[in-house]
Structures are given as structure tokens and as C-alpha cells.
Image 1: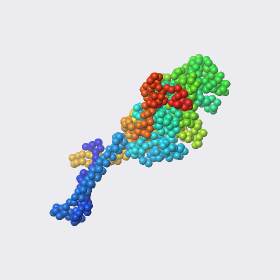
Image 2: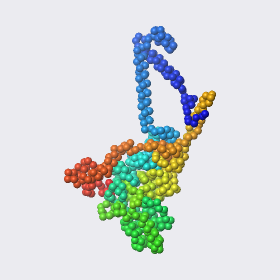
Image 3: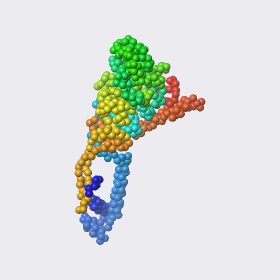
Image 4: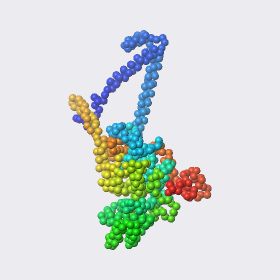
Length: 621
């Protein structure tokens, strides 16, 4: 009966043990023969050693030929060399297999060698030269991805590539993708997150590179104080072409924000409320009012001041649209204003005001998007999803920076930024609910804007952008990274199909009364099944890149990089428990500020503007 499990076919294995024994005996005999001749040549007096091996054995049996001592030494040396070689080879194999996982066998049938040359350091460095990007001797020529398992080569995305990562929760995407990308960036960096870990790990390293660092934290995710502020209405910029469009895009971020509910949108009131907000934002911008004034207008639907402001500024069409909404019947007006009020509910929170208005502290600097880009700054935008989320402001700030970068690129040589902007959108579907992102994604790479969108699942992206939007986002990305911990069966089935199949030889044995018969057949096997992708171990990712076969990659965490010591120090310095201990000590009669500065970073000390030693440019943290 034929067995289903593969078995070894002796005909396909090669030489059997008997043949190996013959080879070994021949090698031993040849070694002894050679040792005899060499030993005799080194001995004194020399013996008459015949060439014929049979005659040598006969003479030694009759006592007419003696084994030289030098020959024994030679044999011992040969044995020693052989033992050293075997031990060295064993250790080399052990080192090569260290950290190797069973799944790594798949790497040999996936992308490697010349097929992925565009992802190697040489490939991305050549690409950077083609794009006219000047790199220093120590600059990383692209965005780190990981080490190809097949040949141990470090792989990168070029400064023209767009990335999308889908990893399960707590699988190391921050430590292996987000943080390394920020650490190695050669230009300005925009990073979003709903946790403080990325900020703590990278802020001091970026600051040491001369990058002014800002943390936008209206919900206190990282416990930051508002030492600067961003005015969303400044981005709307009345008087400059396209201000109505930017006002509408700002309103869109509030309309698309997640308030923590699962309520469906209303086909009439939601678009009307979004239009209302666009008009109110533009009115506040032309009047140079703070964005919080819009909350007042939304809660006072009979105050028609915004209409008057728009007409005085020459925005007649927008004013006419507002007039129609203000003069609608009571029920309709109430529904439109009520929906708009729900959309901008975060503007009523006093903890948000200090981040988007000058407030009482007139010394705080206004964040300028263009200046941030030109000075290679680092901006961290933090928010938590759910009710009271500041996600609309985070997504608006994200678009504002990228929009200004696009405008700067259009005025630059070749229509792209001289130094690329890196935008790492971690937890993008929760923190940056930018509905137009899939539509604009394909344009970023040609402008020198490298965007990395990080998600926990395909379904998470669908919830934010819809099935078509998520598909468009995935298709527009040049570098697609599938990490471990993903269990979306439909998505994994598509990835399994994209990975394809490889040729494999299957072997079988059949048993019958007359004996055994062996057979081999050439067939195909899936590179990764759905289950194989769902159980992909931590530390391994599959990279799909344009124009290259998929690659199995070992992730490289930040502690394996040259920045490990600096990152560890940055994390320690901004550890909230350590920071709290230092701040609690301030004011103690036995401890002055000079002592604190000897033991900890000045950034942990609540000092006055006169003695904090920091530049007054938007108060970098």
C-alpha cells in the first residue's frame, strides 16, 4: 500500500554508507602511504621504500621495512588538522543556524540575489544618486526594512518608495520599523502614534542631529506641556489661492474623525454639516480669530457674524452657502448645526485649546510648517481614539505639513524636495483618519515625500477608507510589508496567491509482496499557505516590492543598530516614572538645579525660559 508521507529514495540520496566507507578507507591508505614516503625522506638513514603499495606491505610484513617516527608525526599532524577543520566547520554551522527558524527554509525559493538588487544598499544608493539626493558618508541611503534571510543582505526602501505595513498588535513593528526609520532619516520627520514609546526612543537622537523637535500632545499621551502651538487656520491662509479648498479639507478631517461610536452617517446632515464647518473655518481665518471661535458659532446658530465676515472678505459664494444654512427651517438648521457640533466636539475641551491657540502665554511660538521642513525638524503627533479624541487635529496637522511640503516640492528642482520628508503614520486608521490619503498616496513619492502607513490589519484600513480606498492604498505602495500576528483569512489568502508556487520533487515508496518500489515526481507547492502566513513567527516579515519577487526578511530592532546606546539613554531620560522622581525633588532645600543637571538631562528640569538653555524657536523639547 502506498504511503502518503514523503520518504527518502535511496536512488536519489547519492552514495550509500558502503561507498562512503570505501572512500574513507582509500583516504586513510593514501594518507599513510604519503606519510611513509615523507617520513622516510626526513629520516636518516633513509630506507629503500618501493613505489608499489603491495610490495611495501609485503616488506613491512617480513620486517624488511620499518615505519619511520617522522611518518607517525606526519599522521598525527594530519589528524590534528582534520579535527580542527571539523570543529571549525561545526562552530561555523552553529553560528549560521543561530537564530534560524524553520520558516527560513522558504527563503531559498523566494526573492534573493540579483532579483532584489534594487532593495540592497547599492541599489538604493544608486537610486538616490539618480534622484539628485546628496548623501553624507554616514547617511543611510534609504528606509531600513530588514535583513534578507536567503543571503543575509540588509534591505532598504529608496527615497522614492511608499510603504504600507500590516502587522498584528505587539509584534515589534515599532521597534523594528517605525523607530529605525525615524533614527536613520536624513531630512524632516513627521510621526504619528497613540503611544509615547516612539517619542521617548527617538527624540533625543534626532535632537543630537540638530533637528528641532516638537511633540503635539493635546490628550496628554506623553504628558507633554504645550510650549508651542499650531494654528490650523493659518494653514487655511486666507488671501492665498485655494483657501476655500483648504478650509473644506480642514472641515473634512473633523467630519471623518472617529468619535468612538458606530453610528452610521446621515446622507443629508453630514455633508451639510461639513460644508457649514468649511464656511465657519474660512470666516474665522479671514477674521484672524482662533479656531475655538468656530465652537462658539456652532453653538449659536442665530449669530450670523460669519456670513458678514465672509462677504467683507470677498468670499461671496461661501457666504451664500452659509446664508442658506442659517435661514433654513428650524428643524433642518438644528440638525445641521447639531451634527457640526458633534464633529468638532474636541474644540470644547480646554486641554486642547493651549495646543491650537496662543492663549494667555504670548511667548509661545507658532509652529510654521515651512520652517519645520526647511530646518529638518521632527514632529510627533499623538492622539488616542474614542470620544474626545484629538485625531481630527492630528490628521489636519499631518495633511498641513505634507501639503506645505508638496507646495515646496513644486517650486524645487525636478519637482521634488531636495531632502526627502519622511512621514511615519503609525496607527494610521485610528490616529490619522485622513480619508483622502489613498487618493494622494501615489503622488507623494515623486515629490520627495516618503510615507509609511502602519496598520494592524486589512480590516482596520477598510474601516477607515473603505474596501476600494484600502485597495487603492495597497496598490499605490511600492514596499508592502506583511508582519506576524495577522489573522485576516481573506487578506492572507490573497497574499498566499501573490507569493505563488515553486517547483518541488515529491518522493514516495510503495510496498507489495514482491518488495518495495520508489518513485519521484516533479510538482509544485505553495510558497506559503494561509495557515503559514497566519503563523508567521515574530521576527520574520514578508516584503512585497514593485518589480521584485517577495522576500522573507528578518527584522532588525533598534537595539541591533548603531543607535542602541543613544536610544537607551533617551528612553531612560524620558521615562515618566524617572521624570516624576526628578521633578518631585525640585524645590528641596538640599538639592539645587546644578545637582540635577549633573545627573539628568536638563529637559527633565522645570526651569524658567531664562535658564533652560534651549533655543526660543518654538521651544524644542
